[in-house]
Amino acid sequence: MSSKENIDFRSDTVTLPSEEMLEAIRHAPLGDDVFREDPTVNRLETLAAERMGKEAALLVSSGTQANLISLMNNTKHGELVILEAQSHIYWYEVGGISRIAGLLPWPLTSRIGAFDPEDLEVAIQHQDIHFPEPALVCIENTHNRHGGTIIKPAQIKAISDVAHTHGLKLYMDGARIFNAAVALKVDVKKFTKHVDNLMFCLSKSLCCPVGSLLVGTCEFVEKARKLRKLLGGGMRQAGIIAAPGIVALEKMIDRLEEDHRNARRLAEGIAEIDGIKVDLSRVQTNMVYFDIADLGISAESFTSRLEEYGILTLNLDNNIVRMVTHRGIEEEHVKKAIVAIEKVSEELHR
Ligand code: TLP
Image 1 (tube, helix red, strand yellow):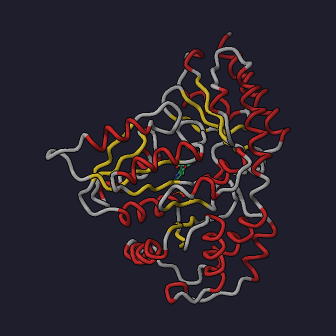
Image 2: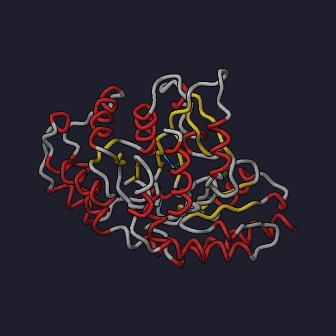
Image 3: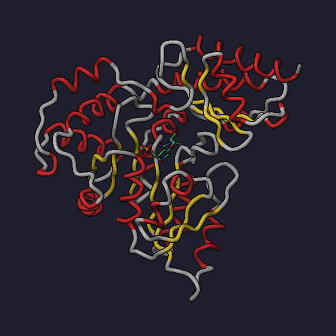
């Protein structure tokens, strides 16, 4: 929570470390990770690789850095990357894909997060002398701007079949991949087995203060280690960051179910309110997006009014508001939020 009075639904990035995480930090054996001598980092990386069913993993400072390193790792400067039009890499990473990695992003639209493998096929085959060589396909799972939606293992396989047939790599921004696995009640490896490499975040719904992990082959991770250094991301006693990550992987995954239940309650409550539209089919994990266009004010004004009731939300686009459930949001907070949204909407209808 950002302050005592406010209930913070802006993001799961606002989660604070658990007591157990703070204890783990206090007792973590440390060393210099650039020399690969931090035992806690090494333990986390081994654990992450095992969980994901891949050869190796690398701790990096953020999801954005993980995505950038992967883009650079899987391509050569000047190549083309096919990604989903609403993806985080395309929207929210300061254009690092072009500015730093020197790549041309080629966006494909989709209905709720996973583009059609046929559209991918067309995009790849469309290439001729006018276009850079396609090198990489990216997917995002869960898909943030589509509402925390899940790309199912079978859909990933279909996309990977097309990418691999044409010699392209498949990368997954799996910032919230454990949310997808918990929601579908399947092992996370079902999602990771069809991608060449991926990242997932510790610092979102898993509640760690910092950190993301890149996961893939040993070769991919060795190259990523050097790229991380290039980008100024080589860390020294990073066991401080890794220690809560170990707690997260061992203890914080099953509880995501609770966040999903709360998101569903929230969405169903909001859906009853006049002037607000929620697409309940998109509420698959810990996010709720809703459309307030019919209330006749901007999402920005709407979120400011809600803040007066102590409810923090994010305005994304003109009419769209996002709320995210996480550790720290209980059922009673959901109830309070629904009441506050109802009040603001009534005030506007008057
Ligand atoms: N997303 C943040 C904001 O940047 C929008 C949020 O609050 O949801 N991939 C995905 C799918 C993400 O949602 C995010 C963060 C990232 C990558 C970047 O992670 P960080 O913030 O660690 O750089």
